[in-house]
Image (tube, rainbow, N blue to C red; front, side):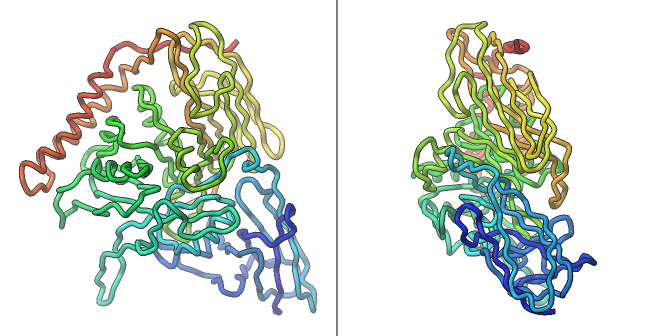
Length: 512
């Protein structure tokens, strides 16, 4: 065993670059660099940062250099740096007197040169410095580190409430930044039954961070959080939309979204498959709600990779700042991914662009492209939630291009989706390869968008269930509080009734 100095350079700059590394010998034994651990905690809020367990295999994050004790003989080296860099799988021979190892990582594509900047909309419990290291190592431009109230273990088998990182709150500016990578600290606000919201780009902390539960009163609303966040240009993200408790699936964020108070629908990495929440998003779009898609890992332990689900936002010629990145998401210039990279245009309009206006029957010119260092199977064109065209992927890196003319007879929304059966190792369950754009909205002259009749009763029933919970179970201190909460769901019900026009839409024809 002897000490070896390791350096990983970026091929474009020739300088050390942060990355994720793994060193093992011929028998598979893992060796951690100095300052890292070969065995480390992987529980929620347990020393999060610097190490990560992927598929039961430990890895470590370095800033581009490290020192490590290695045995003489063959050493297997793995180096990763996000989806735009070619993964390195190497074997080197460490001979007697070997003092240094030098490696290079290289981009196979550069999305920033096309105006696309990736970010993670939600992670927890890393320190800002750990978040900055991991963001740079996973090639994330933005890491949204959200302070959230939790329970932390104390002496005598007791636990106490804690809010890690709240004192690092930075709101509308980076808490830390370096060479094109930002860490911004905001909050995730939670009600244990009604759901939770990520409040990004806030000018100040929005209190209370948590209300309700067995020991608290239901004396607040998520709508209050939305309004306070919006007063100074904040972005409200529906975090964890698969939240389900008290006999209903959606919670208050559904009502707030219908009322125009929620800006973004988040896909995270907690699902058995990312497609689990897509039918809900499709149904929301099909009742005429224009809500873009965002991706966040929800990382809160060393068993999850920061940016394992991420948001790419297009800045359209603007300089890279946190505010511009937030506004690109609000405008819907996004796609989400756990690996593949997408581009998509409808008559030249990108996701989030101005609605296309055209006479009925004229075909739309569609172009979608997917690329990925991780293999995927197919690229699909989605119209009002249904696949209307697709093509298979090929090559390495994998790629697929779909170009077609699509006749439409009614206003609709269109998006591109990439998927595959290849498994990405992740906790608590592996993920299938996946990427999805936000919609392009197609508006025909004289034919406004008609909501899908079948989706309306589904959401109305969910709102009815929440109204029953408010009437029968909410722990309100007085009738005024109960009525205030009920008014939100009733207002959302009335908005759904307003959208009820009946009749299924049949607006998309097969491609020509």
